[in-house]
Length: 472
Image (tube, rainbow, N blue to C red; front, top):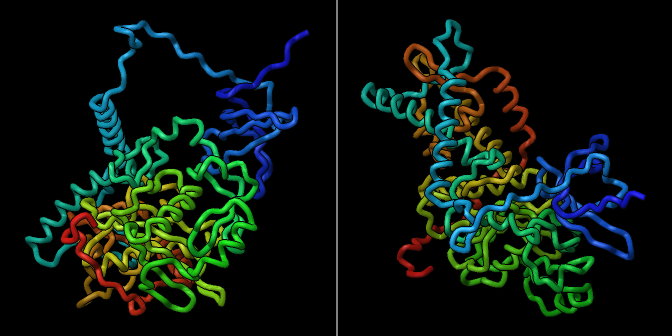
């Protein structure tokens, strides 16, 4: 009799994925772990080419064993000096590979995307990306041309983290290096459910909560101080002693029921660390470690008679040499798809305006983060272009630098957005920005839906010069 096939870690096979929005599908998945509960096996699967937040435990009846692929055995390499003979990966060789990828990408870009030839008809609304002074105008066009060539690369490998060419990790402590993904433990969700106030949240990713709490059916969090507790009884006892009814720190913005609190990672270490643990459940690309001292946290909350309830947050380095105005950003799942993400992004740029700087989010962005930022940049830039007035019957003019100064959006982000929207054309020796009727109508529809906006008059914020404060 044939022995039953044993499905082990590393095997790949089609798995039934139950989809709420569309009909069920059978994508290829990898088995990451196997566990036995009362004689019944469960398999933890990662769907290939799907985001890790969709990973889940499945029963054997959802596996298509006929198409089982066993993991490939690694070829044994000869030993040299007690070490495997294969050459280890070196930083220099990794950099060379990365450069090779960039060169290939650049040549492909130059082959596939040539500047459009001058056209005969110009659509109704078009703006010159130039300076009125001839000397500055020439300089600007040359700069613009150079940046356009480079920013295609920049937008591919820095923004689209899903492209497989991650930007070089910074060693600030706010970015998780990809090595953590090699550890099978951190590739698997370890918390089943979190109760936070009136919401129950299903985590998307691993978070380093204490090991003894990971076996609980529900992890309870105090929604005001974010302390984690093992039972409802412990939470109720804690709430009788917890005096907080809002995030610690200074309230620097309030309009209607929306408030923002500024929290210093050094002064409010316990809260900051608890916030990072909660955020890691929903952020895969990056999160802060236990050293929260170099960071500020801006927590957005919604007020009712019981207190200020956390909606989302972003963190920011006190001193950033790279002009980053956001390190991590998150809207909690119960509040997603309601405009709060854009509100967080808009608030981060309002702070940059008060500081008199341009800013950009730390890369790589998650898939959802990239969508939110692209949408925000598009709407913000189109808002400015559509408000331009023509003078003396001529087309209105604006430069990339001027857009950047008005919005505090970094120049590279402005250019990548204009490219993404396909607004740039070349006409009679000049770069012009052309707005089609489709773009205008789409923008107007999007702005009608955008009810939540930051009111700069409600912001009470004084930037600090952290360079004069020693070690923060």
